[in-house]
Length: 121
View 1: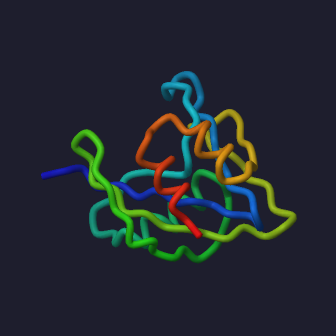
View 2: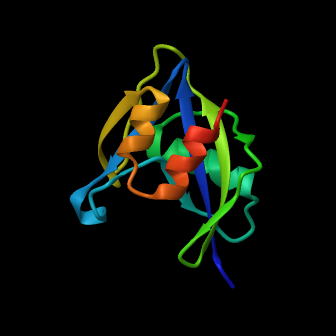
């Protein structure tokens, strides 16, 4: 059975959040993501990961654009952040940036999240 994860694209107007995983967590640029815990739906996991990794309490909208990398099945979501909101990063991350779509996609380590970001309207 594949591992199940969620990825959340966080948008603030015309900018997208990218977060840098701390060196002990491989040190690359990514979006908000994490595993689905037993008994959770994908949407519940997305809301929880968003809150845990950034402090943002917001609804998520399914993007209906799942992907698989290595042995991981990923369901994708988008969340809108308020205009004045900044993340409170958890221990997994040591930096963040708000970037226009193309710049954010260029910075992402994994090609699947970058392609997803480029596909959004």
